[in-house]
Length: 294
Image 1 (cartoon, rainbow, N blue to C red):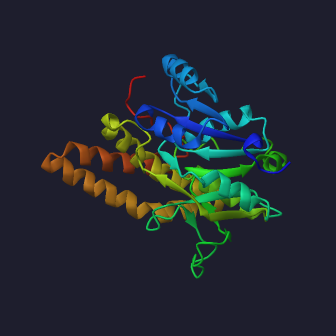
Image 2 (cartoon, one colour):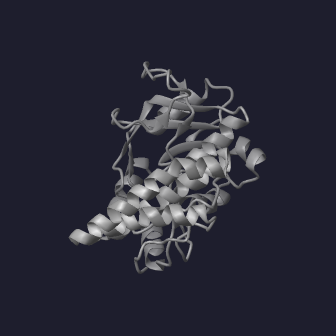
């Protein structure tokens, strides 16, 4: 069955995302099934959403699972053949989904289709190699990977390949999308961007801004941990260690510098970067969580 609004579901993982989520939902419309996975125990959040939006169902995870695991929970609930993964800080244009549907009819074999960011200075895709550049913004083009904040999965095809386990749940945040895309490319499946389908990504606004410091600490820890884990998984432990060790040393130096001059926020950021590397190098799981009470 081909891609259509009736054969498409949207999965959005949220966590303290009330400030931006409604703009996202309103940009989608009410004729597509939307599954929200809320990474907390906020039952009131679920009740309010399902009361306001007839096409929305909300799963309460009861704890912060992270992006990859949260998306897996939502995907397993989907009965349609296609699922669009979105971040809550993404806003669709009026034609975003229609363009994806239209283009899909002319592509015989794809695992992922993705709209592109409306801000061309911050592309949400990586080209096949450094010599290739996207020069025609009117034609579908094959790419190496797309960012996880907007990616349409050919679920019917990928279910057979990944047995419904899409994202590696060892990643709490960052690079789970790169890992999925690499595994897809490695088995010679195709990833395309659709330049006529555009989205606006607010960038780093998925969690309420009042939690900025705690989220920033978490981002710095997980970015380093995830980079190490990704490289170790695909290129070996030595590659991961050697590529990350200089930043580990740099982070320690900056931590002590900011400790001396009394900049506590910067001090914590660089301590978390060093800790992320240290824990990954020790083969410990991505245990760090933002200090936010549900």
